[in-house]
Image 1 (cartoon, rainbow, N blue to C red):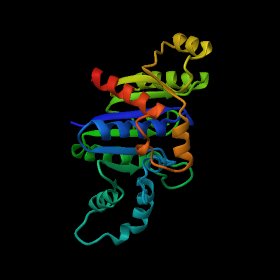
Image 2 (cartoon, helix red, strand yellow; image 1 turned 180 degrees about the horizontal axis):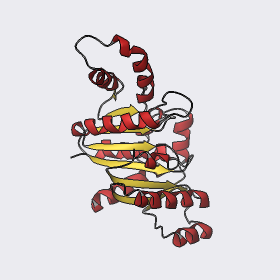
Image 3 (cartoon, one colour; image 1 turned 120 degrees about the vertical axis):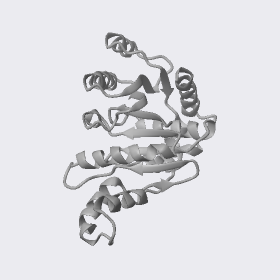
Length: 253
């Protein structure tokens, strides 16, 4: 059975980096193939993983609409679309990647989300782990992209706005009755001691972080140089914090 992890939170808080380091941990410490899912229309998980993404669910839907009158004989539209979607999977040793990308028209992401969800469900039998990097905010929840998840990691940076976003996501998960095994709060790019305003806000909202991830200059440099975060050394502060987090996640599993 596939163990499914998703990250969520406001924009600019390092969700993609955390998703990449979770994949790094799984690749090094847990046997079995991993499916990396970039559920953000602005797909950049592949860059963090050092994988080149040529097609997305969105781009395939656009091209499929152009190609549908040229479907090869003997294939239904559904079968041909599934064939094209499988072509979008980027394969590498231990980790495969699929990305949502953009749909047709300005800001039209609903249909690619629906197709992505169904396609992921069909792929799960082939993988031991799935790690999903979601778009910023809460829209992915109402579209139910983030559902049937074992571990939902709610990521905040060291800010009041980030923490309030996490609380709203937690509440929306409950309101929509999404199937989520467990959700945990993480403070990313955190100082050694959290600001009293942050701890007070966490307490008022009933949030207790499972982990804090320190700012890591080495990770920032890897991003600047467009190097795969999978290649970060074991001495990296962020790597060590994520490794500790994931050990705790699997201990509670």
